[in-house]
Length: 262
Length: 155
Image (cartoon, rainbow over all chains, first blue to last red; front, side, top):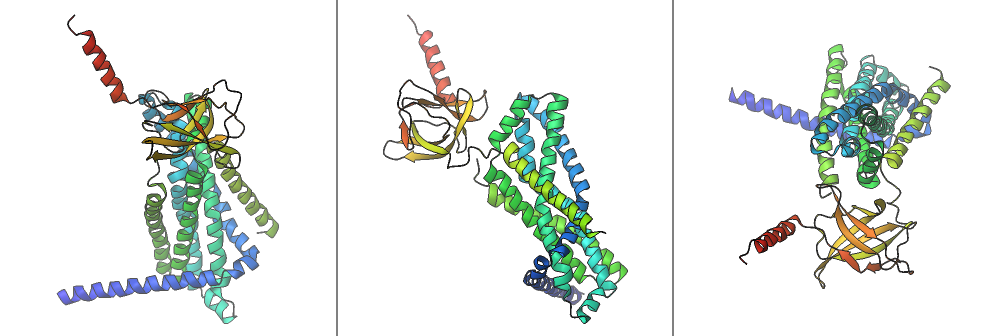
C-alpha cells in the first residue's frame, strides 16, 4: 500500500520533470526556428488574424464593461470620502497596471489559446504534422513559430486596447452618466499615471503574458495525445494552466515593478 | 480567406492597437513633463517635507509646471534637498518661493511655487532660497493646545 503510494509519487515526479524538460526544449526549438515566421511573414499575419483580430470583439466589449463597472463602483466608494474627482486616477491606474494586461491575458488564453491548442492537437491527431515531416517541412518552423510570434505581437496590442476601452468606459459612466467633473477626471488621471512606471510596465506585463499563454497553448497542442479525448483534455489544460500562470506571473511582476513605488 | 482581406484586417488591428497605446501615453498618462530635454532642475531645501514623494506635482498658481525629481537628505545642513524638474516653457524669477502644500484636507502633497519680483530668472541647478515647510498636523495641534493653555492661565 505504502509502496504503491511512493511509486505513484515517483512516477508523477518523473512525468512532471519530463514534461518540463520537453516544454523547455520545445520552447527553445521554437525560438531557433523563428526565422521562418519572419521570412514568410504572411504566415504570421494569417495567425495574427485568428489570434488577434478575432479576439477584438471580446476584448473591446469586456474592456468597456470593466471600465464602466470600475467607474460605478469607484464612484460609489470615492464619494464617501468626497474625493470623486480622483475617479479618473482610480480607473486608469487599476486598468493600466493590472486589469488591462491580466484580464486581456485571461481572455486571450480562453479565446485564442484554446483555439491554438485544439487546432494543433487536431493537426497532430490527423497526422498532418507527421505528413509535413515526411515532406521535409519542419512543423515547428511552419506551424508553431508563426503562431507563437502572432500571439506575442497581438497580446500587448489587445491589452492596450482593453485598457483604452476601459478608460473610455469609466469616462462614459463617471463623467457622462454620473457627472464627475470632466476636467478633474482627466487632469488627475494625467497627474497620477506615469508613462514609464505605469504604462510601460503594463506593456511589459502583457508581452510576458503573451509569451506564456501562447507557449502553453502551443505546447499543450503539440503534446496532446492524438485522440478526441486527448485534444479536449489538452484544450482544457491550456485554459486552466495559462490562466493560473498569468495570475502567478502577474503577482511576481507586480512585486518587482511596483514595490517601492510611492 | 482572401489574402488581401486578411492583411487589411491585421493592419487595422495593429493600427488600432498602436492607437490605443498612444491614447494611453498621451491622454491617460502625462508624457509631456517626463521628458528631461525640455526641462531644467532647481533645488529647494526644506526643514520638513512632510509626506512629499518623488513625482509629486510642482504647481504655480494651481497649474502643474513640473515634478519632484528627487528627494535627498543633506547631511551637512540637516535638511531635505528637493530637486524640482520644471518645464522649460515656464521661467521663474530668482526670488521665487517654494512651499509644500496639500491638495484638499487629506489629498496628496505638492510643491507650490510663488513667483517673486526679480528680473533675473532661475537657471538649471539654481537654488530656491525662500522655502516654507510642510504643515505637520501634530505641530499644529501642539501649537493650538499651547495657545489654549496660555489663554486659560490665571491672570
